[in-house]
Structure formats: structure tokens, C-alpha cells
Amino acid sequence: NSDSDGKFPLNLTIIDGFTLPKGCEEMKEQYDYLEFSEEDVWICSFPRSGCSTWMQEMVWMIVNDFDFKGAETPIHERCLFLEKTTLQIYNSSRINPIENIQNRKDLKNPLVFKTHLPFTLLPKQISSGEKKPKIIYVARDVKDTCVSYYHYGKFVWDYKTDFNEYCDLFLRGKAPYSPYWNHVLSYWQMRHNPNILFLRYEEMKSDLGGVIRRVSQFLHKSLTDEQIKILSHHLDFESMKKNPAVNYEAFYEPLRKLRPEGRFIRKGTVGDHKTIMSLDMQKKFDDWIESSIQDTDYAV
Ligand code: A3P
Image 1: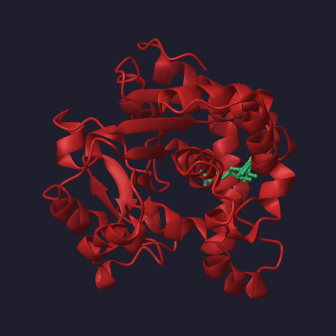
Image 2: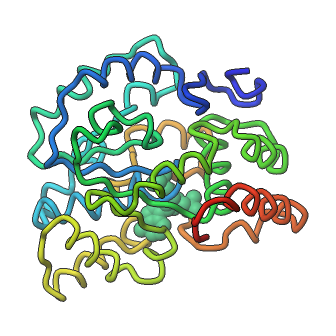
């Protein structure tokens, strides 16, 4: 069933085995025929892995030479979310993907794209290897990702499922952009390509300065130690949490009237699953992780 057994109040579809927002079918057809530049930077992840805010802000600041004034513009106006047109209620009725991408004319080069699509479903020029823009993938501990996604779903889509039920749906590949492992592995398998940088949320937490350095080298921008310090401060959880330009205020402010505790930038910790996931469920995840990666060289 495309709407995840009716458990999610979302309009979903299946493309190549992935559960996606309904509008992706139409969007994909049109994007496959657009021109993309190799100069651009693509930030990709499974949802709630630290890409929509944290990595996007990092990359935007680096490619725009620390333009703090420009960074006051909301992040969704500075970067292009590929599936933006499907975002609102995952409803396919008002899709205009071309317009979304054409907005890029107003933006400075290189463009920063964000997408939650797996590598295999990126626009054809990129997934076929014909065009090689810079691609940064962020992966996060899957149990923490699931917890973050659950809170997000409760806030934005008013999920009625309880947490255990949600975990079962997640494990069964029913949450949008699932199955999780097909997603992560689609980029992991490509990570040796020079245009791909595979990073982890946990590294960003433990050594943000080191990740900023790696990302800047990958983007051929050299930063001084002082700049790395300044950017680390700008990207630190407390600074980002109170920065309206990266909290998607325009989208979420109305929802907060209904569910005041909800936040896009929520808690930002490693190991958050331990506060909510039963030991039985953790074991279920561990077994699932083990069997999903056993024939791969993926390192958790
Ligand atoms: P939590 O819900 O666990 O807090 P995405 O942007 O890809 O949707 O990911 C959202 C997750 O990244 C949220 O996780 C959010 O709080 C976290 N995040 C955003 N900015 C962060 C930062 N500066 N430091 C740590 N975590 C951050």
C-alpha cells in the first residue's frame, strides 16, 4: 500500500522500491531532462540526518565566503530543495518542478541543492555519471534518525502512531524515503568517486572543525584556523537553534500554534534513541542493521 498501510497521513508512492512523496513521479520525469552544472554542490541524506540545516548551512557559508549578511535570508531561499514542490503536504496537485529549479536564476553560483532522494533516483545526468557535481552525503546512526523522524512526523504531520508502532513501520521501509539501507548504501557504494564525500552526523558532533576542514578542502576553498573557529561557532547547536534563518520558521511557525513543543532543530544529540527506545526495540534494530549490512563493507 502506497500510503504506508494508512499509518501516515501522507500521500506516498513507490518508485524503484523507495517510498517517496507522491509528487516525485512527475517531478522525476521533468528533472531528468533539465541541465545541471558540475560546479554545483548537492547535499544529500536520508531525512533527519543533519543535512537540511546543519550541512546546508556549512556548505552555503563556505561557498559564499562567509557572507553572514546573506545568511540572514531563510535557508530554503538560499539553497534549492529538489523535492520542494512535494513538501507541503506530500500532495501532488500543485507540482511545478520546473519553476522550482528555474528559481535558480536568482541565485549565485555555485548552487547548493538539497535532496533526500537516493543516488539512483537523482536526475538522470547525475545518476548515470554523465555530470559529476560535488555530492556530500550525511549519514546518521539509524536509531537516532528514526527517533528524530518520529518527533518530526508528530510535529509536522500529526502522527498518531505510538513510538513502537512507528519503529515497526520504519523497519519495514514504510517511512518516506525508505528503505533506509538502500538509501545509505546507494551513496556509500559511490564514496570513492572524487566528486563524492560521505560524512557522518556523529563526526560533525565530535569534531565539527575537522568536518569543516574536510568539506572546505573538498570544495577547493582554503580556510584559516580563525575562519574554522568562527564557522564552528555559527554552526554550533545552540547558535543554530536560535537562528531563525535555518529553522524554516515560515513553514513551521503556524504548526507551533497547534503543537507548541515542535521544532525543526530539536535536540541535536548522539544516542537520543536510548531515552525513548526500549531495549527490545534496540535489539530489533541491531539485528536488522546486522542483516542489512552483512554483505557490504559498510562501517556503522
Ligand atoms: P534531532 O531531531 O535529533 O534533534 P535534517 O536537517 O537532515 O532534517 O536533520 C535534523 C536533525 O539534525 C535534528 O535532529 C536536528 O536537531 C539536528 N541538527 C540540526 N542542526 C544541528 C546542529 N547544529 N548540531 C547538532 N544537531 C543539529
